[in-house]
Amino acid sequence: MKSKIRIYHFLLDYRIGGPHIYLNSLNEALKHHFEITVITPGRGENTDIKLINLRGLSRSLYIIEILVNTAYIIYLALWKKLFPKGDAIYDIHGTANLAPLLACRILRLPMVWHLHESAPDYRVFYSIGRLFLRRNTDIVVPVSIKTVEVYGVDRFTLAPSPVDIGFWAPCLAATSESQYRDEISIVCVGNLNGLKGQDVLLNSLQSVTGNWRLSLIGSELSTWKKYSNKLHRLAENIRKNSGSRLVEFTGWLEKDAVRNYLSTCDIFILPSRSEACPIALLEAMAMECFCIATDVGSVSQIICNPLAGIVIPTDDASALSAAINFAMSLSKGSRKEYGRYARKAVEREYSLDKVARQHFRIYEQVLSRTV
Image (cartoon, rainbow, N blue to C red; front, side, top):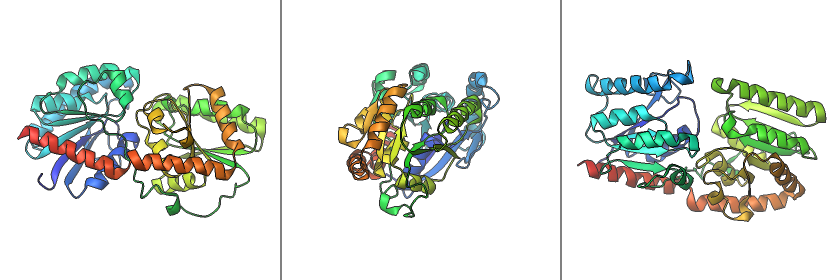
């Protein structure tokens, strides 16, 4: 394989989320082999080439956005010469990211299609997108076996979310003790939207006894403003009813700050309604946190050992309350023992080094098919 092959990554959203973290981790691991260009609708901090973002005006405009961006990508390729055919790979992230799929099919460019979702609502996008693939050259890469099952993916190469276990390690985090050490620290990481289930977590905490403090780490998205307002109301109700218990909305944090939160937290919770291979959970497990997660996406495969965490049903505040109360009843040493098993599971299956080697082979395979 030639050095510095160009990879053009198309993401569906310019805002930082799971696919961006997935991509950034891989890019760091593979930077000596590839030149990376990131393309998004709208401009974010990682964007190199900006496409049109009509969803910012209204979600109903997405179909028009697909058509406009398909034409724009073709224009950039044919007239601006931005997207070459030789020694380049086009990596499309997101099941609903149809514009680059269609454009690359028309331009006959080699594609890798990363499926980062497992929600049934996205099945229609997969059904459309697969029509644009060339079976002899393009490769579909689901991040979760749940994605394969829900969408009926027949030919694929599975590549889960990667975790840099060198960075996400308890010994590297800030060691200063929290000013709230008399409280149980609970942490939840994820942008505030309905699929992440923070409302279920807040409802569950209404019946959790004892002294605790919750940190909700993640951006408040303009497209989920009503949901964010609902979360703030639930948090205010908790404060009024308990007095001593506090819900903290941190907003978006850099990964060093997230690591520091995880290093001092007693319980990490993933209350999601939908995930594929949740990076936030993997990072918390790598940090040896006691983890509680809903049974979505690959969670039951990630926490396959009952000593590595607790898996509960989705949308079940009572089950989540019971799991939190159980975790709080344990000694700090017992919770840490769960955390050590959790880290071993991540080291074994989800390390950045292992997943990066998978991607290197995937890109090699795509290039060999286009020769």
